[in-house]
Length: 135
Image (cartoon, rainbow, N blue to C red):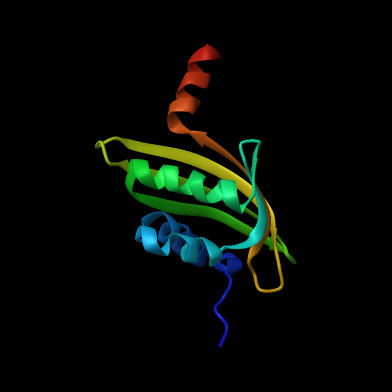
């Protein structure tokens, strides 16, 4: 029996993302491969990454946090295309709490794994500085 795609529901997407951020280091690549194919091209805030850049990007986030909680607000599918919006809450190793709002779109293959993804993420601290500049 095949495993359902992480993009089959908001709940399965949240579970897959949280597993990638909160799993033991030894499981990181396995957890990421539950969501993405190794050939995926991932763009976050105009930073285009392949597998070799994306894994260190995730490791850097994990190095700063003890855990990450995700709340998916919307997940829309149109065939193999998808769009999703979520809030991420990071619990820092130094005791800080951070949050970000993310909007993403992408495409999955026939197995339901991401082959490309574009994400815009706004950190709460960035949103606050932008608001203060507009006044």
